[in-house]
Length: 431
Figure 1 (spheres, rainbow, N blue to C red):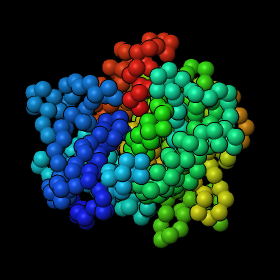
Figure 2: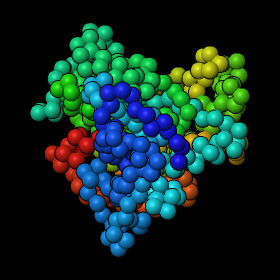
Figure 3: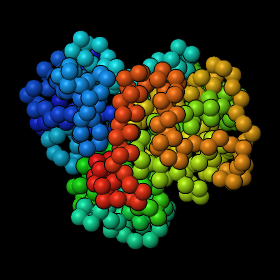
Figure 4: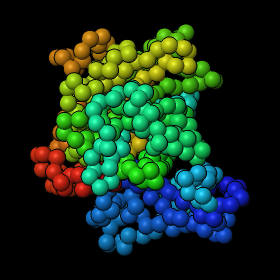
């Protein structure tokens, strides 16, 4: 384990330390400052079931952890220095990683899937940079409806109306070490977007886990319920999780030739195109997320790609030498960031290794394309593809993929055709 400085900032009496579970929800423990050095040295125990529970904390028998083996423990160790929460004086927060009681990586820990792909990229000579954009809704905790009305996308008036909650979110997250670039109202009442500055892939995923947890905490302190549920309102905008990729070597963006998107980037795009449908369960992991996949909603429905085009699945952005990148737009705001980034990175690296070529670029309305491959618009199709996917099994591991498929099949049983009270109860308050 990485040894951290066990010294806490003056005035800290409690550390909240957590990991991302099977759904990328941050779960952990609160530790008194007097016990922090022991945690840095030896970690603390948590049940392995943390990686085998659904968003409501329901548990079922899985291949790796079950009633037959007694749902054993694992250990979690801090991997970042605790940072004080300005909204909760005396409390600091940090991310952790899990190891088994045998001191080996936990096979069903989603973070390890991304660790493997980052190491693979490094062996190929690349450092992976990822920027993340997440949309979410700020709702009244009692009515579970927006407190404002109308579409105010990019409106600075709407932004000012929400500043009493978005300001503390931006500033508070920066203070705990999550570099926020900007926020803005999105395409529905109550919907906002907050962008996290790009960084190394594993750190980017860790930050998403903490980001979603802390946004919910901060919103609660200001009288709001924050939800990353993909589609809480049938007729309103869904909430996405856009990822921006570039590969670097010796301080140079390998997708850029004088600011222009290059051949290596095209290979990466081709790899993503090839696997987008197959890995749909990683980008949309519950039935509600597939309600977001509708034409003319700025959520992609196919594997098209093109320059600066918000109708495609893979948007190429050019500009300065450092800015050239690929934005993948089909992810849902409530999916697991470790599995999402691991599958996306693996697909892109496969494209580079095989020298794959993408389809023709789309410069018009990608929703009208008759040639691009479709991505699943329903969860049953995504499950069927995942079951047959050697690619996902290789990326996530046999047990990790089985748990994801089991959960997906269970969720289908809970959900009826309309957005039902059951669906709201299961997802809105938990994601």
